[in-house]
Every structure is written in structure tokens, then in C-alpha cells.
Amino acid sequence: MKAYVHVMLKDGVLDPQGKAIGQALQGLGFAEVGDVRAGKVIELDVAEGTDKKRIEDMCEKLLANTVIENYRVEIA
Amino acid sequence: MKAYVHVMLKDGVLDPQGKAIGQALQGLGFAEVGDVRAGKVIELDVAEGTDKKRIEDMCEKLLANTVIENYRVEIA
Image 1: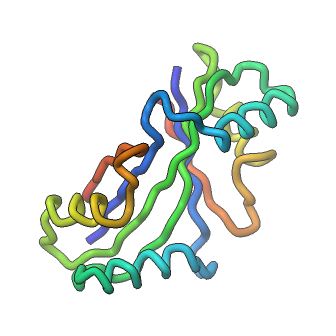
Image 2: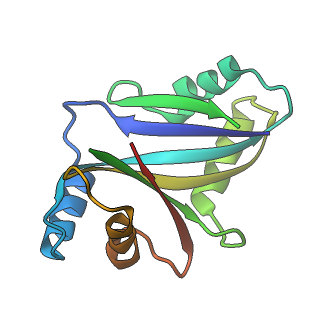
């Protein structure tokens, strides 16, 4: 089965990548774009029946830096 | 309103970042993890009523490299 982990910087943490994307879009004429935040998505192929708790363990230990990032686990 | 753009490498395109994550997880004892793919998610704050087509234009022009990446737009 597939698990998707979404990792985003916490609100209030400066996101230079997002800022750069926003400015580039403005420069290309996409004036309707305001704030932009960039994050990661990690698609994991895990053994059938793997517990969500187990995926959250992976996030805590490796996938997210919980000091500055939030994560969200989605099982599909 | 918010738009979310998910950018993933196309199937068949080598993903060294995903591979590294997979091996690190294995090394930490998460044996249930198989293939891992890493991608990006870009959260855009866009003007109310912005057309999905317009976000797709942004993807084609800047956000995704359509030679090697697929993108998916989600409006929330």
C-alpha cells in the first residue's frame, strides 16, 4: 500500500524557496499569486497493513524536522 | 483561496533522493518500507476565483519540469 507524507515548514518559519517561487511567478505576470510556501511530499510503498503510527514514527525520526516542520500522513 | 501543486518525478525517472530516504529508513529498522519517491508540494495563495487553467499555466512555465516531472493541481 501507499503512504503519503506531506512535510511543510511551520507558519512563521521563513521560507526562502517559497518566496523565490512567488517572486518568479510575479515576474512572469501571474499577478494573482500572493504568498507561496514550498514543501515536500514523500510517497512510501509500505507493507500491507502498516499502521499509521509507524509512518508517524518515520516522520519523527527521519522524514520531518519537527522543530521547524509540520507533517501530515495520508494512507491510500 | 489556496491552490496546491504536487510535483513528482515521472515513473521511470531515477529518484536518488527517494532512494536515499528509503535506504535511511531501512537502516533505522523500518523494514516494511519498499520503494520511496520524493516530490514537492507548492502551496499558492491565489486571488479568489482564479481558474485552475491559470495554475496549470504556472506549472507548465515554472513550477514543474514537464520533461521529467508530472504535476497535479488541487484547489481548496
